[in-house]
Amino acid sequence: MFGSIGLPELVLIFIVALLLFGPRKLPEIGRTVGKALGEFRRASNDLKRTLEDEVAATELREARRDLDSAFQVPASDPVPPTPGEPSIQPAEPPAPSLAPVEAPVPGAASETDLPPEPMAGEPR
Image (cartoon, rainbow, N blue to C red; front, side):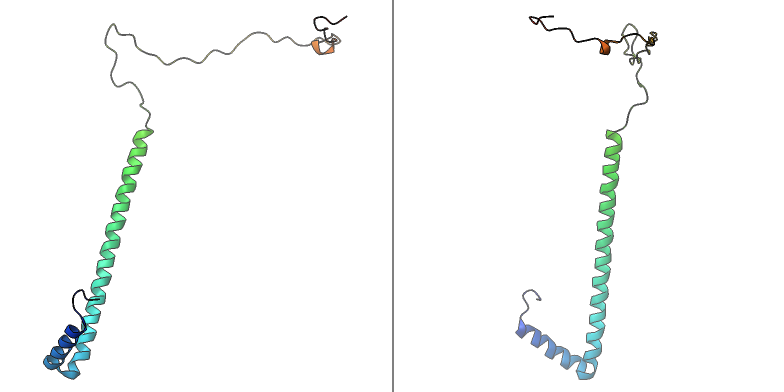
């Protein structure tokens, strides 16, 4: 509990404190020491929590910066090509086909209306 201090040492400390401060003053001193230890423990827990929060916030900022740099798309080529060196241009999308679409003629037979052709070796 107190490291290397055992029961005999604690009894000796209690007897010395009783002789120095007297039986009337000892409970008041115990309360004061208890309050001081409780406040010290509370302050140390607050400090520990604050440090942990700061470390977590720093890690989140670093992760955010790493993600931003990983997904960052360059706006343009920052270094122009040297004269005589071919430059790579982005491919243009293909132009849409402007071929006329044939409309079906009313009353005309379509491919789906024709009977299927016989397979090779099959009589007609």
